[in-house]
Image (cartoon, rainbow, N blue to C red; front, side, top):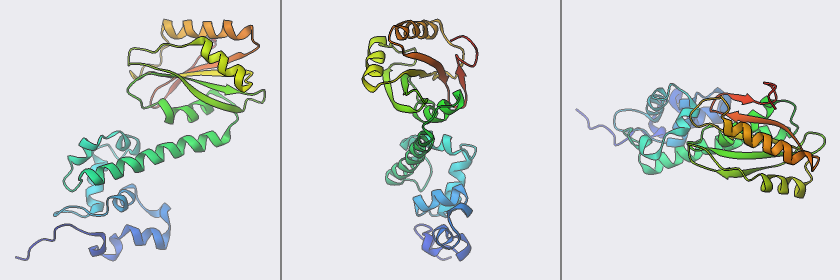
Length: 232
């Protein structure tokens, strides 16, 4: 019996199973997720090609790229054929994809609804294991001037500096602000603390002609809008 090769290099695959050439000749849109990840990985292991390996990795997260992006370096290295360098490369590629989504949403700039705020902020805080509180600052055309992290806390909550939030609003010339924070627990129900900080910012903003337009609670796949629910 002939000895098995050390790994299935892309160069040794059949012509129909070479994702690099497929991307070059047919375009990136025709490749499956597994084929795209296989290009990043480069080689498989002694028993399977990179495509087969990547299919197995994706199957472990129900073929969900968002879930793939959550896997740690250690979790990726649990798959035979994925060493530290490959795991780090996969992690870097997933992070670039996450950032690209955030930038694409930000290009729209104008806030027209709570869903547009969710599209901008979900990639930023929707998948974090801890809570963060952000402020989105808007001009009089509801276009984003900037968005800032106001505080970062543990999973049990975060402290919000109302004075700092409004100081920044004055500095950048904002006439409206949107409050955004995540709930790592996955619950969309606002807490009493959430309601209190909203009321504080509304009251403080009135004297400065800075309006609190909404407060969004964001989880991985959904959001709660104070404005949409009529409790702002």
